[in-house]
Length: 457
Image (tube, rainbow, N blue to C red; front, top):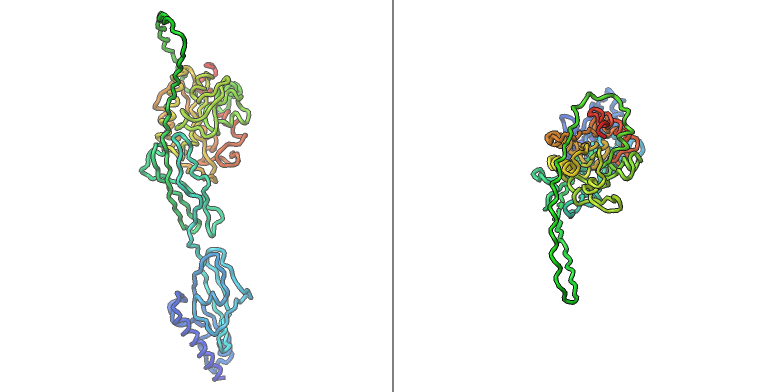
């Protein structure tokens, strides 16, 4: 029995020397030089405890692995000590373990040395993810001034652990006008759940559009003839009388509902982008009252988009003048938020109102703000929309147009929150489902009633 006890103690000492000399980062308490054994006292007066210590001792160590890696018991123990001549096996009988989740996991391993002495090694495995996401499809983009830059088109981001990764696109903080001609530095950024970040830079180049007027000279060759007498100049037309604009009355308190929804719906002409086009596409206004289409924006309405009015193709401002609406609902901005800063957007919005007013002095203009995106959408940062809306409201209020009414479409769609209300999305987190437009019409009617607009139409 004494011989067996000495053998057990020697085996434990040898294991401790192996662990102390392997040079790996391990931790088992204050003493990192010797293994901690649950049965370290061997005596002849306690034979059963001595025999148990000879066959099984328990040691705990910390070890770090990367998520997604597989380890046999030998490979995992090799991170802690040199296992030459010994055998390792997982206590639960597994031949290999895949560490596919981050966090800490306790693993028990049976260690058998060359003398057949067994001990239990408990590894506290810290599974970490230190690999950053990777971008694919990022490239420099070139567009003409007035076109929409689709910064996220064709760009994807992948991660070794997270299945889905969102990403954002940022301009340099010092780049105040993202729609100006020239080169703009952009950065694609992503962050996984472990905090690993990735950033890839690219360049957005906006080229100036040069329009060259073509003149056609008509040359007629014929027999010499006497020049026609100069025509008598027509008298100059009398100057058009300055229109008298009757301002809207001061607003009354808002009611909870309106009986004039259908009346305003039939009178209203809608000008704007694809979100505004929803009024027409879902059948809430007739086609001839629609002056909205996808990709139209406050920054490009002068040179982008064609509308068929009375058989002629024309830009939106000429189309508005041709249709001559008495009630015009304006809603544009979703195609501005990723390209134009908030103040530029607000200035463009005011210029749009001024141009309509110069052509149609008596038109009642509804200036609607940008609707929110869903919280799951990565089209833009919701704060970009909020900043643009705040700047627009301030600028339109300062304009002091007596026949322009601000309409808070954002709050109708968000339900008073920050993002688009649940169930309001048409599927992409940007456009609106059919059920939202009656809510907008009802809120708009309540707003127009505050100014007694029906009496002016």
